[in-house]
Every structure is written in structure tokens, then in C-alpha cells.
Image 1 (cartoon, rainbow, N blue to C red):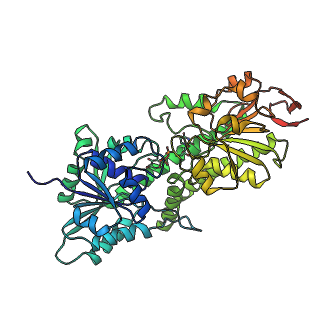
Image 2 (image 1 turned 60 degrees about the horizontal axis):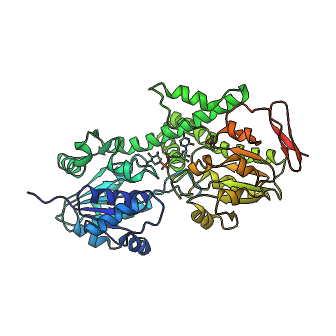
Length: 466
Ligand code: UDX
């Protein structure tokens, strides 16, 4: 039988490392390339330089099976393989909404120049529509004589925290700009998920690029939509969580991504909608640009809202107030703090003179690297001790499982702001907390603390402390 295609994966971050391991799991021989020697070395030893459930095990399994290895040598990787996945980052450009495409261009150029035999280059990075066409001219200009190189797009939809499952059992496979030959090769590479019924969408290059950014833009829009409705709920005395549950039963809407709160962050959603705003404007598609501009603004205003709530809860100023912050990661099950709403809020309160003490089950270290001047605690209890207000900014299970009575005995003032609507409000109120979430009608409870009663106005808003 003809030999199975061999695979290289250029860039071994969340996307590349997971994709390389998944390809090995699907039975292929895979080589991952990274220009960071420390990263390549760590992965070769089965150590993953970030927290992603199940990934270290899968990498160790296939480093051991011999199907997976890592190198810094692009020439070695290119000579070894037939299909070359481009998985490098496309960060937001400094001072602009546009995506920085220099890594994608450089990686493509390196692969093409080092080809020793015919190759298929598969773009996986999230890029502005039109990038693939530009990369095709880089391919045409740099391909060695006598060698045939093709470039197609195959976007990746994996979520951090669920990267391994999302890659092994994707919802759909999108391949754009394929010839008959490259389509057949992609069907061979993804034979396993296709065999279990994963739909394959074969389309042109720009559609494949745009599917990915539209998916992220839609998810972002869903979150900002529910956050906008949360504002109405608060003003009208309605409860956004109950409302979202009710909306979610409509199969056309669905319950996912309707959690109101601090909003979206991370390495993808914020930069991807901004890149789409930029690209849409460039293309003259002004409606998409203005819609997404609102989505971004609503999202960022959630962070300010929580900062204001914390200031209000401390009686108008957080200066010298101790604030316990639960959560630093941009969402649970990751240690990623890129554009993290939680860390953003914590840092803003610190700048206003608060004494911020943060605890995150996984992200303390990455957060500390980004904001070394904040104080980090080793547990919920330590973060809560002596706090004038407790803020829940990432919905880790550990936080919703915390016992409100026990935490209450540790704090200076039993004030909690649940910015992810992940706590049991009734239980916290029953334990004597002044509790507030986002998008719920405030319960008019008066709370007595060791230093006297907190002042609560008639609609239940905290106005200060004696
Ligand atoms: C996202 C896309 O989901 C994924 O398909 C794409 O490939 C990369 O970008 P990820 O960044 O890992 O994945 O995180 P995701 O799970 O989408 O969450 C994004 C943000 O939205 C988080 O900050 C999360 O807290 C927030 N969010 C999510 C909400 O605020 N409310 C919700 O209802 C859901």
C-alpha cells in the first residue's frame, strides 16, 4: 500500500502542540517545529509549557510510541514530511486592530524554501480573509525549481481547556482552496474523524478563512448580547440567568455562550473580532464593522462595570482596601491570562490603591509573570482573609464549591461580587453576605459586620459602611 503521508506542524503553541499530538494519535508520523529551543526541548521530554488537560499525557504517549518528535530545525521537518500545517500565532498588532501576519508569512516562506519534495502547505492559524491568496504568491515566488507546492486553508476551532477533545472529535472539518489531489490528501489525514461522521465542508480559500473568524465573531456577539440584556434585567428587576435558561430551550438560540458576566477575553475572541472589524472596514463592509465594534465596546464596558461595583462596594474608594480576587485566568480550565478580564479588573483596582490579593487554581504563575506587583494567595481562604470585598472573576468549580459560612468568618466585610454568576446567590445571602451578581435584581438585604452595619439603599445597592 502507498505510504501514509508524514506530517509537520510549524508552531507548537496551544494550536500546534495539540494538533501535532492529535495527528500522532490518529496514526501518523509527526514532527513539530518551533523556533524556541526551550519549547521544543520541553515538548520532546513530554512537558507542556502551559496547562491543557490531557495534552501532556497524549504527547508523552506518542513521544514514546515514536510517532511524535519536536525540533527547531525547519529544514529537517520539511524534508521529513508531505503535509505541513502552519500553526503559528497571528497576534493583534501594537496600536492597531489589525492582525500581525509576519509569523504566518515567515513560517510559510521557511517551509517552501526548504521543500525537498512536493508538499501540501495547510494554513491553520486564524487569519484575515485574503491572507491565503497573499501566501500563495509567497509560495510561488519561493518554491524550489522542479518541486510542486500547494497551499490550502483548514481552520481550527479548538477551545482552550478542551483542546484535545476538540481536535480529536471536531464538530466539522473545513478545507478551502483545495485541488482534487489536496482534497483527497486532507480526507486521508482526517480519515478517523470523517469515519465517525464529522461533516467536511469543501470550499474556496476566502470562505475557509472567513468561517473561522465569523464563528468567533458570532460567539463574541452572543456574549455581548446577553450582557446587554443583563443591563436591561438589572434596570427592570429581572434575572438574566433564568432568562438565558429560558432562551436556551429554543434550539435556534441554544444555551451555550449566554452566560452574562465579566465578558470574553483570551488569546482569540478579542483579537479576532478586532481583526475582523479592521478587515471589514478595509473591504468596505461597514455593517459588519459597526456591529462588531459595539460587541467589543459592550464587552470592554463589563470590565469597567465590575471595577465600579467594587469601588461602590468599598464605599466610594478602594484606596487601602483589601480586595480578595478569585480567578486570574480568562476562563476556567486554563492558565492563560492573555487579555484576561479577571486580571484586567484586578490590576485596575491595584492601580486605584487597593490591596489586591488574587487566587487562581492554575493561573497564579502566569498572572504573576504579567503582573508581578499584585499579591498572590495559595487558596480561596488566603485570598479572602481580611478582605473588605471578595470578587469572583473566573468561574472555577472550586469557587462555586466554596462554603459561604466558612469564608464569611475570614473576611473583614462580607461583601461578594459574583462577576461570573457562578455562585449560589441564595446560599451566600443566607450565610449573611451582601451578594451581588451581574444582571439580577438586587435583593434588599441589610448586612451587619463586625465593624457595624453596611448601608444598603432601598433597591438593595450597597452605599457604604459605617
Ligand atoms: C475561542 C472559540 O470558542 C474557539 O472555537 C476558537 O478556536 C478560539 O477562541 P477560547 O478562546 O479557548 O476559544 O475560549 P471560549 O471558551 O470560547 O471562551 C472565550 C471567553 O468568553 C472566555 O473569557 C469566557 O469566559 C467568555 N464567555 C464564554 C462568557 O463570558 N460567557 C459565555 O457564555 C461563554
